[in-house]
Length: 114
Length: 115
Image (cartoon, rainbow over all chains, first blue to last red; front, side, top):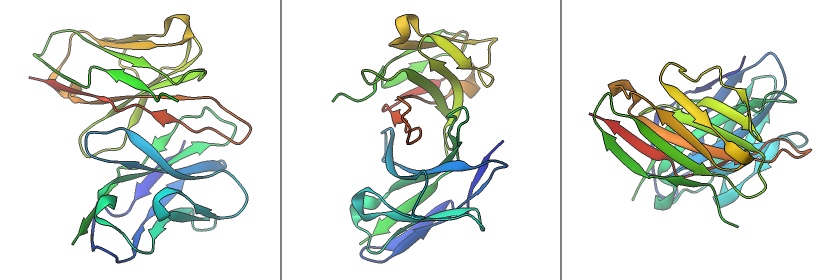
């Protein structure tokens, strides 16, 4: 079985500041890793994914994440945030060659203040 | 390309009433998922379909929840009777697995409030 821990439930930052949203996972098998964003009253939108290869993954809206296998982490970063980045961010994992079931963390609420 | 469509977007019912949610996946996607997202939590899988077959329904509360995916396209999730604890957002997602791994596309969800 897999589990995901998002270490911060809320992250407030000022506009144009850098941000890092932390994600750690636990799994006995190899996993695919995902970050999704959810704006108010909307569904989840994929930001980026790690399937294999380079451990630094670039996504939409200027976000990137780095897979660290030894630390079982997949932290999300953005060098300069905008007001429009205010949303809920979810980290998720899915077992490689498995059931395709996504296991989500509890989410991190990012609030960008002017 | 149209995304995953869900209806209704919002539903308010009294406890013990029945309710149904509808989902139309992205055209060509053979896998369909229903998730429940409680307030302040991440989504949790209820059921997964491969075409018409429910291949993972281990988290579906079968005493009151049922789902179907006739003809392997759109799907309906039903709750009968609804309880107060069923208040949540119900998300539908679809995917078409490629060699590069799974990517699920989510609909906007149905927000259910049980009074």
